[in-house]
Every structure is written in structure tokens, then in C-alpha cells.
Image (cartoon, rainbow, N blue to C red):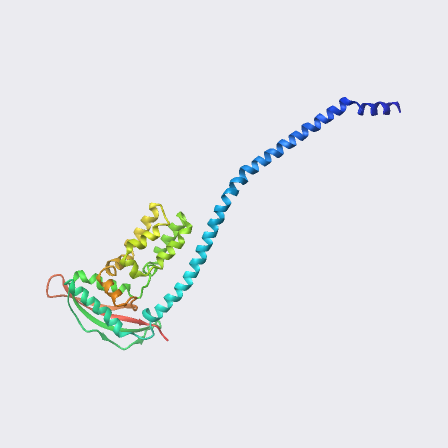
Length: 291
């Protein structure tokens, strides 16, 4: 009983209260310091993130708008292009006057350059269905031309049936541009899409403007070099050389673009009456849309 009284008296002693209070105060100090450190670390991480958040939100918003706009434009463009395909490139009936007019432009422009001396009348054969199910109508035409004109004739036939920059590129060439876009600036895919959907005649008549618009989304020389490699080795080079000159000007003037799809079925070439001149005959297939 006396021991209990001594213990109770000791617990009530001021020195013990001071010691306990000091210990609790020290523990509180440690906890407060840790809390302060946690707040400081949180501010170090979160404050910059909060500062960047509006920029990130704007970026996401812009990309979303670009994506939605691109999708809307794509839907509209596809519909418009399909209508042009059905009307001009693969009609269900040949517009013979339109086809003849294209060859007349060849005759007039090459004659003015003094690289064509004669072009025969164009003769059409009956249309027929090939083994692959496609419908074609052959035509025959002969040119007496200088060798420098052969490129323009052959190139124009290769470019027939194409509408856009993308049509003039192979899948491999398009893949090169897309890979460089992904590596440098993924958001630049919108600019690449616009470039690929550019009307081929418009591109040929102002290649610099079309390419400058694309390159605004890129800064490295790597993408520029990739674009130059593609344009120099693809049908875009033929387009720039042929459609970018007097032939393209006349096609635009008489609203003959885009051209109905043509392909060379066979050709013969014989030496002409003078050095560098040849007589070239073509059997060309005019492609039609099967009903």
C-alpha cells in the first residue's frame, strides 16, 4: 500500500511531467518536419505539373480538333473523289470527245515545240471484257515524233487515272513519309495527309507551294531529305515535268483533268525520216466501270 502511494507521488512529480512533455514535443517536431518535407516534395512535383496542365490540355484539345477535322475532311474528300472517279476516271461509258481532246492537246503542244510532225486519226475498237472482269475499249494512234517527245507521251499515259499526290506514290514511298513523321512529329500526320490528298495537277503546277506547306510541320533536314528522295524517284517527277508545263496548262484550261484511266496494251517504234525522229504506234486501253 505504501509502495502504491510512492508510485502515485512519483507520477505526479513535476520533473516527470516535464520529461514526458519534452519527449512528446520532440516526437511532434519530427512528425511536423516530415509533414513539411512531404508538402515541399509534393509542391516540387505537382506545382510544375499544374503549371504544365493548361498547355497539355490545349495540346490535347488541338490534336483532338485536328483529328476530328481530318476525319470530317476525309469523309468529304472521299465522297468527292469517288464522284470524280465515277464521272471522269472510270465512267461506265467512254466520253470519246474528251479522250480525243486530250490527244489533240498532245498534238498541239508537241507541234509548237517542234518535236512532233504528225499524229494520225484516233480509231476506236469495240469494247470488251477482259479475263480479269474489267471493261476496256481499245484505241489506236500513231505519232511521228522526236525522241525528246516520247517521254511526255508515255508519262501522260502513266499519269492517266490518277487524281492526287498520294495516287502517284507507291505504298512503300508513302510508308517512308509516315515513318519519318512518326519519328519526328506525330502531329504532323495531318499535314502529310493534306499533302497526299493534294490534287496532282495543282501540285505539278506549283510543287514548291505544296511542299512548303508540308514542311512547315517539320524542322529536321532528315524529313526534307526523305521528301526529296520520294519526289525525285516517283511519278511525282513525271507529273512535275509534264503536267507542270504547257500540257498541264492546256488540260486545266479545257477542264480535261482528271484523265480517264488509260494503259498501253502494245506499242511499236520505227526509225523516222531523220536522225532522232521515230514513228511510234500505240494501242491504248480505255478503262471503263463495269455495270
